[in-house]
Image (cartoon, rainbow, N blue to C red; front, side, top):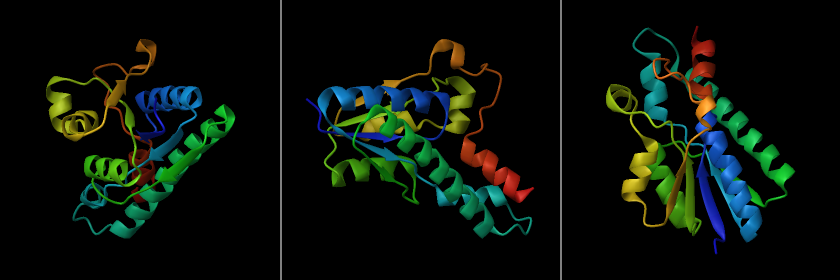
Length: 169
């Protein structure tokens, strides 16, 4: 039914759930799975602030962290014996994912979602919602197992943000 599945990943537990689900669907359909980790340069530069920190260091750290996230997905795909490819665009996430879906002729997007609502969603945004609203192909949204969700009062920081913070500090 599906021949090419696109999976945006960020290293979070919901993202890992999306990887597992996409690989299962990919194996069952003999489909290629395309993993995408977008490095949003404007957000990385904004995190450096006007304090004189070299944005180049932050960008390098974000790209390196994104590469590590894609390497993890590569290992999962190899273990599942599913054909996979990997993309790391340096642009806004939602538009990058949708553009890659068109370019690669994907017929399904599988994405993890934290399931935030209220103020946390307003401040942190929703990549999954942006993709859902703008995609012209089916989008399957999944969550991590309930036990894996961070406490609703705990702010989740993605792997790349932690790496950037370590580099800057």
